[in-house]
Length: 222
Length: 222
DNA sequence: GTTGACTATATTGTCGACATTCCTCGTATT
DNA sequence: AATACGAGGAATGTCGACAATATAGTCAAC
Image: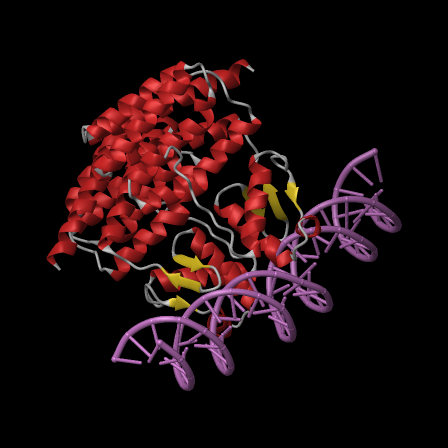
């Protein structure tokens, strides 16, 4: 009941290769900024170059690689400025998502969301930091899906979130901010439950802004 | 001096096919909702299926077509609800773009933008509605580019704007709203010139919201 | 020593053919 | 008559080979 699963089923061979490559890039097994040789990858993954090309095209679509004609594809480079820009987009989109969720989520979905937060509260109270990784994701995913806006869902789930995870993994951002983030989540849910669109957006934006500031601070001190 | 050109140079064959197909879809030469047969298109455009597939992949990336594994690609269908959702995303993103533009545009760029609006004022005063099409686009593009946020620029220019144009062309939305929109533009620019990020975002969001309401009204009455 | 052109090589772009999957339509059975 | 099943056809998925392009390295000229 607690995990909002995003089902991505691989039916074709290019699908599998795409998922594999995406995972390898996000998790850093393929380093940021490195070149993606089609022939090399085709031998590595035991598929034809056509499959690799299709996978790379899709990776480009989610902004994980950049292609130049007749030259090739490179994994994107991670820069502090890039992360800031990413969070600016995220703030705008998830703010809108929260607004729309306050308008469009069913009472049942809101009840589920509240129950989810109660669960999180238990884990946080027990001093377990399991929350940070999966719990935070779950919360944000539910609100994004709750917006019922296909474009919003697409851009955030298939695009931005993989990039954010890539930054998280490779620039190493675990950090505290667990308990305060929990309170922020609670207030967002309350606003949604009250169908207060304006407040829901504002609180979500602030939540993401705080998160950005927190990250910025860490980047500067290291 | 008045047109913020977006240079898209076709170097490869797939590039040309992609541009051609995108134009054909947006302008309605290929009807919304219709199926895109790879073999058919490859004979029509005199290129191999591989080129067509690459082009279709890119079209999918900008949300102009939808693909299903082992079945094929279809041009997206245009629905009133889809247009509403599109404008919700646009409001969020361009609002943020205006905020960032107020922060990041150079004084020179702002001066250019002001001059541009003065030009528009002349055309509007002369009763010329040339404004609506190119002028409006030019204004919005400059602010989007002025945000200096690559993600924002990418999503808006390569994704959303083609879709919006597709709706404009095919659901036929010219309409008045020229003079009032001009005033709204003027106020946005003023806020940017004053480096008032908060107000710039608010005014831009309102400008897009009005536009959305205007379109909604037209859709309902027809 | 530096710059320029040229060649060699490796990589990407493009093609046609084959494999696999889905959809349609006809047939048979309940 | 309605449904289930299966054969046929057409479309997409995948492959290996060839063509076109960029990069690196060499050699020559100034």
